[in-house]
Image 1 (cartoon, rainbow, N blue to C red):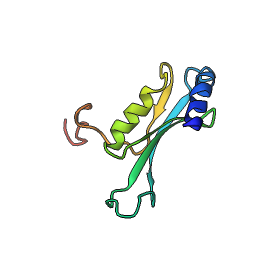
Image 2: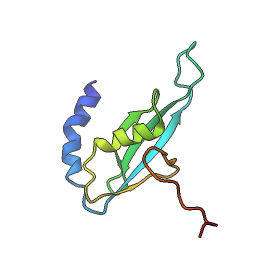
Image 3: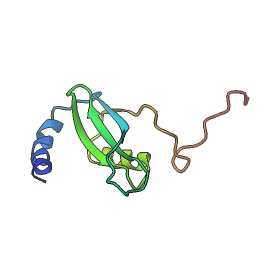
Length: 107
């Protein structure tokens, strides 16, 4: 908790260093071997939002009970994104939010 509180005090100062056009990269990582003995076989996932220019993680959210997409949306909700470029490599399309892409053979 002390580390979380310290980051909470520092991040607003870091956020002002972000400029329009800066890239915020979003990625989820499986946290292998983090379960306690006897827990189910489901691997926990952490989704992080990383400021590329500053080389610092701005937010990290566990996706242990939801989906990786929901955790990414939550992490991005913690950051002022106006004017920033968000890159999410490997993100899956969520049918609830985006339309189907056009078929390459449809005309």
